[in-house]
Image 1: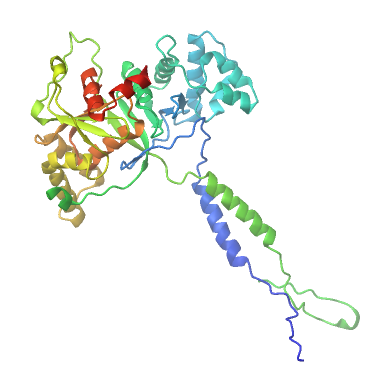
Image 2: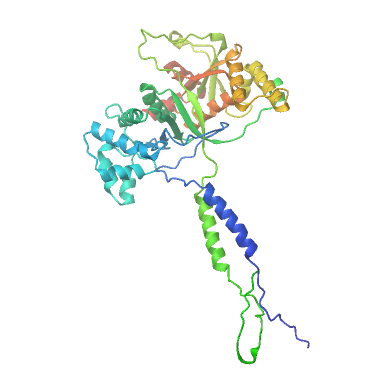
Length: 212
Length: 222
């Protein structure tokens, strides 16, 4: 019987092209990435044909969850030295007679995702290190007529940053009563221009369709 | 690849080049890169979210001083967002006094043959004008920059006086997705004049009768 000779050398795969390709993809992703912020509530934004990109700053975003909670977010302004976020919080503190310490303000400045903490629990929220406690405090901003903290946030946000624009980010299943309430509060403060955050979806109409 | 020739100075002066270039095992590196790529792909928000702008009419705070703007009833189209992703509409206007004999509302939906067709039928003249204009720009008959294109279209819209004036209203059981959808339809159909107004109680009643959810709706709110 003739013996089959196995190749003595183990087959080496040259991984260089693969590494090259991976590097290119990796560098591309690293440069284009903008980290997704974890939000207190998951929302699936509805689709629209609008192609206007979201502004990078001067935004106050209202996050409306499916269960009717309202969360709010601001940005620090075009220049980080402006520090809009801690200023807004300090104003809020003054209104509700809560003194926030320097570290708490700094933590609020760095905290990027939306907040829905009643102002009385804010101190606890900012000082804790435990994420579970933090999540349990994130119950949505109260906005009933007795204690309308949402209106106060809007008021101070606009005082601190006069160029701020209102953006509404809601789930497509959010009940309209919540949306209407938020719009109402905003309109009470003379904010009549809104940006609704949507995802892009193409829609096409044929002329023939309408000429029938 | 560069080959390192190690000169051996030894006995007999035997010079020998190494047969194989030193192989670097790249597997761990590839592994790590794979991990990083997967991580970045998962965390990246590729397409930035878009925004749709809407400007609502100012609230009338003092009805004695300000008066609601008057619009012609013949051009008015009332679109009411109802429960279960349905759209109800009726032309013209309804006065509060007629609550005993309310006109029927018609039911439609968000499909292309639903509310879009309804709007396009009424807005055909303007839609055609905008479409022709866009075609001219695309085919190069007219040379315009992007900014002036938008401006000219909004000029076309504001000059229009045949298209419908759409009043969008929302029943309390509608959802936010419906609201965005209907505003989107306005943009798709090139409606020049539309706004969002609060629903009146008799309109809510009209929708509820049409949907047959009168009892169900009151039960769920109580």
